[in-house]
Amino acid sequence: MKDVKIAPSILSADFSKMGEEVRSLQESGADWIHCDVMDGVFVNNITFGIKMVEDLHKITTLPLDCHLMIVHPEKYVERFAKAGAHIITVHYEACKDNLEEVLRLIKSTGAKCGAVINPDTPVEKIEKAIPLCDMVLIMSVFPGFGGQKFIPESLDKLREVKAIVQKLGKDIDIQIDGGVNPENVALVKEAGASVIVAGNAVFKAQNRAEMIAKLKA
Ligand code: DX5
Ligand code: ZN
Image 1: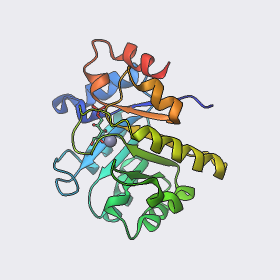
Image 2: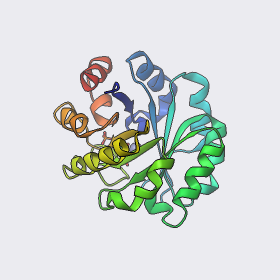
Image 3: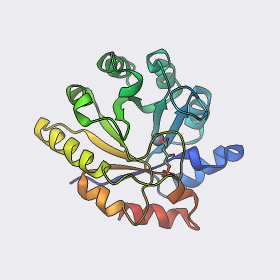
Image 4: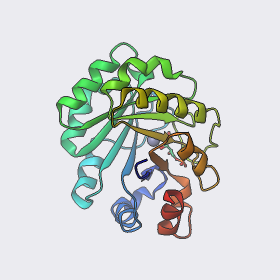
């Protein structure tokens, strides 16, 4: 089994000092920086976009994991890649008719690509696209806000994706996003997650390095 990566979500950061926040995550042992991009249309919240990724890319060597919660992601993926995104994930719900095309477009930029499903979308909807993916992201909360409660049914979806990935025999990461904390992290790892997003757990911790180590252990 490969090492689990921890990807703190900067959605929970203090946006007025984002540079310091990201430096602190890097010093605390984060593996990736999870960037939650929201457009106020696909979800009921607005965060940040390409410029944030571009500026963060200048101040950190950590891979920027860009989770696009936006409609028409195909319009923007090339610019996110150019800004320095290491991996770009797009929602099935935002590109039901062209998911595979969008994944190929991301790959053509040189960035890694991933497909995301919401808690009420079955794994079978993206099954055909999984061989194209570097990562599959299972949402364990409905996207839009940090600090929500983990939906336990997500564990079955992780197992389902893990079985598909094993059958393919490909090196595809499985990411879990939403409500992960020290109490449930063992369960998500057991179920197959190899990349763990954590917003509130890391940002509300007294000691970020200890929390990241705890989630990783
Ligand atoms: C939800 C975001 C998540 C979320 C994670 O829309 O995609 O990345 O902020 O935050 P926590 O860990 O607090 O649920
Ligand atoms: Zn996210």
